[in-house]
Length: 152
Image 1 (tube, rainbow, N blue to C red):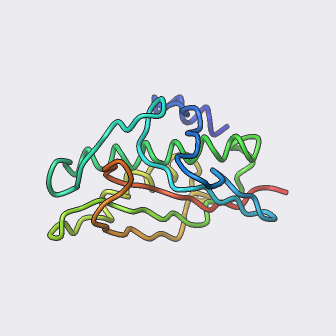
Image 2 (cartoon, rainbow, N blue to C red):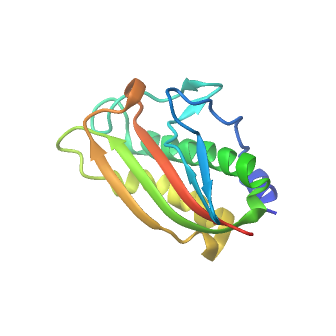
């Protein structure tokens, strides 16, 4: 079971974050599930703030991306019933709040990608974008959204 693997890694799913504006936290269309973008929050509060290349180190950025991914997984569990109902991770889109000279966005988003591979194995192999941007809501260092195929 995927949640057993989470526990073995010393991780647990947070409570799903409530929407911060007017949108659905998750949408299921056929066998695809789309999460809204998730920032690195705990108990509804950002646990990292700032830009990569300034206030946030690469290691902190990777930890923030992992936290974003855990929040996405919490939504997936809620809407799919179980993480074991995930047939495949299809796409990960990662946004990195970074200075103009910071060019390691892919390494930041690896914090999320590596978690998905550890949990889902080959089913965790996904298409991906790692995009640098000038700001994110609340000065979050990163934001991640997932598209997954769920079992019918």
